[in-house]
Length: 328
Image (cartoon, helix red, strand yellow):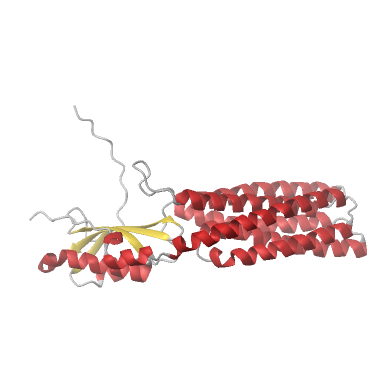
């Protein structure tokens, strides 16, 4: 008997569709947009203040922090743009829509910030060999203003950064800059009491190190999504066990789990169904979809029942590149 194929998308099931309709990511966008607009305005003002203050006080640390603040403005602006772009509907050429834009923005933010940090390290290296006098009082005042604003923006975005990789990347920019402002404040106090000018480039290097830690973390997370990796909070073996727990399923083959964007997961798999339970195929697939949605936050699935080309141990089936056949 030739096995039958049955495909089902969990977004179509009543239970899963109800969960998707109440998805927190969509409901939060209106409030998030407003907060991002305000955050962009505040950080833009601080960028101008710190850049001017760094120039007037001859502080490399303050100017380095200004560069970081500029990247905050850039990151927040890209994050806001990504939200608007992700709302565009799917098309015949982009059937998933443009949800991946926010992941790519996260990757781009982090990569560009790593390049900027390299320039900061170089400037600090040059100044170590040629220390410059710094006006510490002005440096301290500007750094305190920057710290206060950065803390306000960080608290403003904290709730959204927990569940949104796109906002998380911008949030890391702001938190890193707040930490950098603390470093500038400490450096200004030390220079004021000791006159040690080398503290200024030293603080610049510390700022660069803070930037790199957050940047590499976001770069890794966004690259993992772009490379179709299994979502970090999903244990593949647990997903397979839950699928097999449905009565009538005797095997799972060719399973793939990936992220469309930071919080939208998808799955495809071939399921071997016991011949005695094939009359229940639709019921079984609905059970699997409801379980995946409720337990693993996977709402978009394609399940093929009674696969005919799978080996018994072919759980992770390799992707094979095949040449196109030309019809004459």
